Image 1 (cartoon, rainbow, N blue to C red):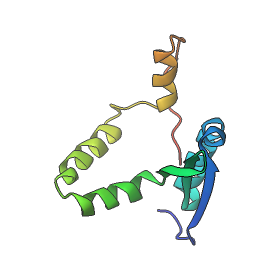
Image 2 (tube, rainbow, N blue to C red):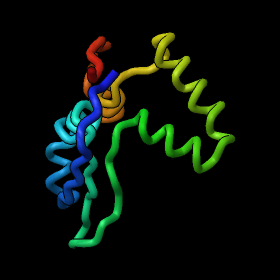
Image 3 (cartoon, rainbow, N blue to C red):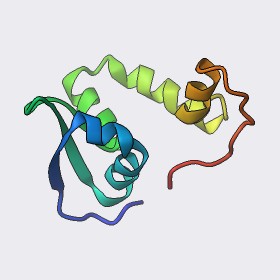
Image 4 (cartoon, rainbow, N blue to C red):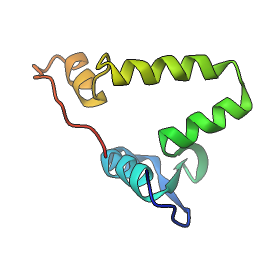
Length: 103
């Protein structure tokens, strides 16, 4: 369980976020940080911790609760893989399965 901290919201150009996506994901997950990505100064998307996003989605649409529950079962059963592996595979780069996960 994460230790609650004060939320931090940062605005970042989408080009800079693309370069630092792994770091932003880790900070959102571990440090309770939020990121608003901007294109030409216009906010277009946000990054937040997945658990918090699932909570938000459940409140917004209770039908998603079953989908989220199934997704969590898939993760626990090892039926998922890191996004980097999928991206490399789609790019045609040979990939060895990874056991590394964000903590």
